[in-house]
Image (cartoon, rainbow, N blue to C red; front, side, top):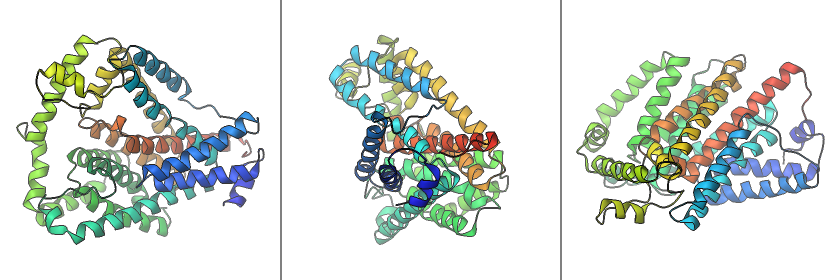
Length: 406
């Protein structure tokens, strides 16, 4: 329980339930790095209790800059489901995505003081470090197989999902490791975490997540830490010197269109664009594309999704939905950037918002080669991050206005 923090932050509602919801929020964030089952039990448990308080008019849902976008997205998904290639399949997919959106509101509501934000960030980082250590030890026990690309690390999740989660945590931790005012224990935690998680990421052999990390680190270097370029060069040199030939080959295959997995993706994208041409306005709905892709490829070649966010948005939501998604992410970017600019007098807020900007860029680079918008674990982490930034935004605005905490 976090009674002292809660009692000072919340003046209304059932304090026992509020404490339980806060604990559920912390448990949810802690489990988000390794288990969708445990994280969703905690998330939905806390969400149901909060809805109970809202129905009893003991609490309320605050406004956010993204409210209109969430509502429009709901309408788009409803329309595309009605006209979907397979309406039942579309309904099964969209309910998973829509149920994750309240994460933003839960995080904003129950981490609405600086102390709670700091504790939630530390909780997230501790979980990621523990998972990183566990993963690194697991890889070390079979290092010969992993180093020669006979295995890809996917012990507790699919290796692509682990790659995406690792990318997020590395980019969120990096500004904390570099900020001159970060307390030593948090800086140490971040540095240790980056080391173990980067080691894990390498042996997922997930190239799109590698590219996401590189893009995100570059953004951090450009915005604030020019010296980071030297660290990138040193890490790259270490991997070049000590990495296995298979690791090198996997990296350079990124640039080879004839690589089997690259060629397969190009084929997916070609078939996907054919589907889009026949359903240009509202797409085919949020469905599994296996049957439809086989129909369009005129062969046994098929895929459930096209390993590219942009092409998947065009296929599933059409050009109308795609344009909306584009504006939605532009709005999220503006929230991240504006909050970062307002937080530069606070090491905690500045570091997290800068890491979030980097992770936002990494997410979209990763999404050029994966359907990470459709990966519940990845998108769950994305909404936690966005919720944290909007909580920070709310705290900064409240402090400036002199408004007392709830």
